[in-house]
Image (tube, rainbow, N blue to C red; front, side):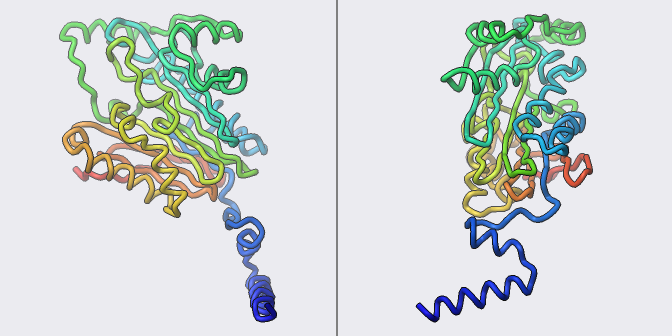
Length: 327
């Protein structure tokens, strides 16, 4: 016992002499404190710098990560020029704009909507589902009824540009996912605030000209997005069917839980896709972003061309992700 006490005493003195405050985090909390200056941080799929800026405006004032990711996701949802999220999103093959979204907070609570129509901000409806109902997911007409009961306004989300694109598509009526189309897709956004609270959000109008009723990965907890305050968060973009089959966001968080850096965790999720579905992986794109609760981040995709927005240490920048296939 005396030898053990002497060892602990010597170790503590050594840590103090070296000035390693992380050592105290290990002793008192079982995990190192985040490196100074790393927090807060927010990361989003594609060049969504306007979204990360909206999130940073909340985070930089000491705000909650949950509020930040919701605010960030609302930016592309209201952008008529974004053809893959919310207002302006390309419709399904029957001409209907259908929306999917999910959100998670630092307590592990989650809310989701899928096949929702006529509502500008599905991410905010998803948050209401999380906070005001005993459920995690509401779908279709039920999700719309709930949104209207909560005061959301029913709107026509089919823009003239989207309608014309649909009319042109009907000439041949070919459903063919396109890799990195216009360098954007679903928005996945995850953040950790100054109080080490982790949250994530995901929102999309889905694949253009999909079958009516199709739902992808975006509203599915663990597929399109997953957050765990003990570890971090991850989000996906690309062909939802592939993400659904492997629950990629949950996989990344679990890889980080086992000690992997977010970059290595994202790479593992992509490698698993490529190994399990080699033919689909050669033809389709999937990209992941990841963030751990120390403020470290990572991103990786099947094919070149996937980029992401990172706002950290007061710098909002777009970075290119690495890829499994190098063409």
